[in-house]
Length: 192
Ligand code: 5GP
Image (cartoon, rainbow, N blue to C red; front, side, top):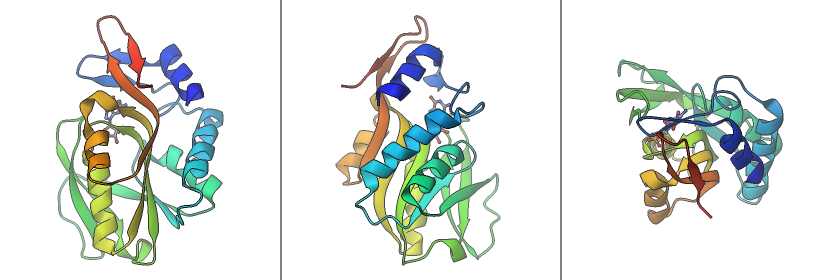
C-alpha cells in the first residue's frame, strides 16, 4: 500500500536488531487518518470472507484492529498479555515469544468473547517471525472458531514468519512488506 510505504520511507527509523521504529504514526503517536485508510484496505481485502470478529493483541495491535473492525462492522477483541501463566480457567491462553523484548509472555482472551460461531480475522501492527500470529491463531483453534486469515500493517518479509504461515495455508495480507533494511544506512527496501 503506497500510502503506508511512503510514511515508512519518510518517518521510519531502522534500529539495530532488526527493529523498525514507526512510533510517530503507528504504535505510540497514532495518525488516525492513516489508520483509517489501513482499516478500509483490510475491510476491502476481507469483505467476502464472512468475518464476524477481529482478534489482535494489546497494545500496539489495537488501533489498527479497531479501524478494521469499524470498516468491516464487526467487534474487536484484543488478547491481554500476562507476565506469568497464572490464568483463570475462563480464558483461552497461549504463550508467545516476543521478538522485540526477547521474553515469553502469555496471551489470553475470555472464553465468553470467542466462540465456535466466530470467523476470525487476526490483525497486528507487525509480523516478524510469526510468533504473535501463531499465538493468536491458537486462541482461535482453542475456541473452535474458524480463521479467515491475518491482516498486517508491516511485515518484515526477510524474517520469514509470513511466508512460513502462508506455506501452511494461512491467508496473510500485509499492507507493506519489507524486503530488507539496513540500520547503518537507514535504507528500507519493499517487496514488489
Ligand atoms: P513476531 O511475533 O511476528 O516475531 O513479531 C511480531 C510482534 O513483535 C508484533 O506484535 C510487534 O509488536 C513486534 N515487532 C516485531 N518486529 C517489530 C519491529 O520491527 N518494530 C516494532 N515496532 N515492533 C515489532
